[in-house]
Length: 153
Image (cartoon, helix red, strand yellow):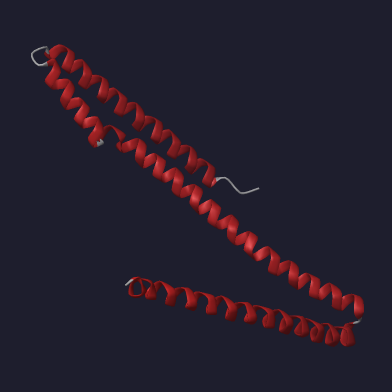
C-alpha cells in the first residue's frame, strides 16, 4: 500500500545519491587533471624562464583567479545595498497610503462622527506627516546623488 506512495521519493533519492557519487568522482578526477596540468605548465615555464620566474607566473595567475570572485562579491554587495536604499525610500513614500493607514483613518473618522474639527486636525496631521516624509526622502536622494558624483577613493 505505502510502496506506491514511496516509490517516487525512493527514485529521487537514488538519482540524487548517484548524481552525488558521479559529481564526487568527477571532482577528484578534475583536481588530479588540474594538478598535472599545473605541473606541465611549471615544467614548460621553468625550461623557458627559470624556476623562480615560473613559480611567480603561476602564483600571479592564481592570485588573479582568487581576486575575481572577491570583485564580483563586492559588486553584488553594492548592487544589493543600492536596491535596499531604493526599496526603503519607496516604503517611506508609500507608508502614508498603505491600506492599514487608510483603514485607521476611516475608523477614526467614523468614531469622531459629528466632531469635524478633530477630524480636520487629524487629516492635517496626516498631511503634515506625509509632507515631512517626502522632504526627508528628497534629502536622502540628494545626498545619494552628491555621493555618487564624488570621485571614488
